[in-house]
Structures are given as C-alpha cells and as structure tokens.
Amino acid sequence: MDLHGFYVGPDDYRRIMSGVKTHEGVLGNPYLFVQPIEYMGPDTFRGFLGWHDPINDVWGFVSPGGLGNLSIYTDFRSKNPGYVTFDGIAFHRILAFYPTDDKVIIHLRLVPFNVGVKKDTAFMIMPFKSEILDHLYRDHIKPYLKEAMGIEVARSDEVADNDVVVETIYSMIDSAEIIIAEISEYNKNVFYEVGYAAAKGKEIIMLLQSGAEPDFFDRSHVRYIAHDPDKPELMKARLAETIKNIRTRLTS
Picture 1 (cartoon, rainbow, N blue to C red):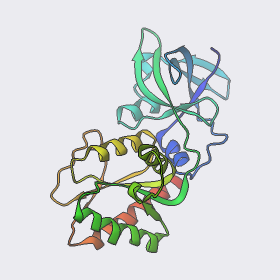
Picture 2: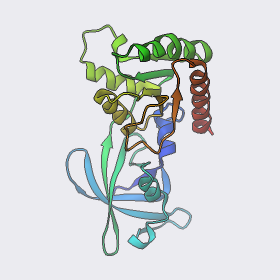
Picture 3: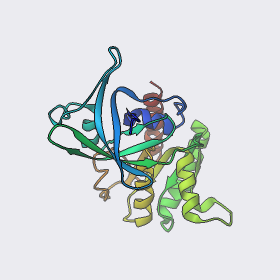
C-alpha cells in the first residue's frame, strides 16, 4: 500500500464542515502522514504514522518516543481528534493510537463528507415536551437569530414530509452551519444527536438552564451558555456573541 494520507487538524476540519473553507484541494499537514497497512472493514483501517520533510523530500516513521509532542496526538488526547485525508475530499476520523517497538499504528474510520453546508443556518437540538424550553426556542432563539443575524434556525419537528425522521435529523445536522443544543434535561435523543454532531466535527453551542447540572461527561470540558427563563436577553446576547466568535475563529 503506497498511499499516503495527510493529517487535517480539528480546526481546519471544522472550517471545512462549516462551509468556511472548501474541501476541494485540501491536502492536510504535509509534515504528518499515515501509510495504510491493514483494512479492517469497508470504512476502517490501520496504518503507520509517519513524518515528511517536504523541503528535502525525506520520509520516515514516527517512533513511540516522538509521539507525545505531535499535534495529531495532543489533539486526540485533549478529546479533540483530527482527521486524515488521502484526496482532500474524504476524511477519516482518528480513533486510537497503538505504539509498537519502533513505530506507531493509528486506527481510522471514514466519515462521510458533508456536501451541502448552508451558511446562515442553525439546527436546534432539544427536548420537545418542555413548555419552558419550547417558549425559549419559539419566542426567543428562533426569531432573535433571524432578526439579529439573518440565521434561519430549525428543529426536526418543523419538517412536514413523509420522511424517515432519523435521516432527516442527520441531514439537518450535516447541512447546518451551527448546532445549538439545549441540554438541561436528561434526554437520550438530545444526547444521541449531540454525539452525532460532535462526530461530524460540527460547531455545537450548548445551552443549560441556570441551576441544572450538565450530564455530558465527554463534553464537560466544553463551555456552555447558562440561561434564566426570566432573563432571556442575557442568553440571546451571549448566543450572538458566541456565534460571532466561532465565525471569527473559523475564518482567521
């Protein structure tokens, strides 16, 4: 197997998934590559992690001792894994590292590419049976973002079609520029949809009602916006500021 896949860091991947940076021609980090050694299924494989000196065109494999300071590994350890691409179009998510005596094996899985990210769109993930949260969405978040920022916010229950619901949710998450998730209640559907969005590298803004405890262990390190039902203006201001900061980061 002579193919070489190059590393794409999590920030660049988010730029691509948010439609800020085109996926066409993305080659990744020219200093880190993966050489496949074993296919484990149609979408997963293992490969050796290598380094490349593009100036002198020298290639080599990363040793276990040299792994600790590489961005591909530090990103993974910080729960912010990157991706590997062979053609700048398809991306493989990094799942695990396996040091051997003299090399490092990396395990990857193919992630389908989001072909239709729509700018100025957001998908709302939330429980549907809470009057307080429904009021927050319909009377504050949805109209405010439309008026203040020109962002169309949608929920899956607003789709009127004879469709497969879970496929509609996947499609709406894939195409949204921003994901907004209300996580105040212990809701399995919310957890599942946030997990899917995170796996796709989407920008997720989490909202948590004041006094509630977050239940997301894997995302406990991520900031969230606390909101008080009696003070929605504070939440709206922070939401708009967060979106502006995300866009600035992705375009810088």
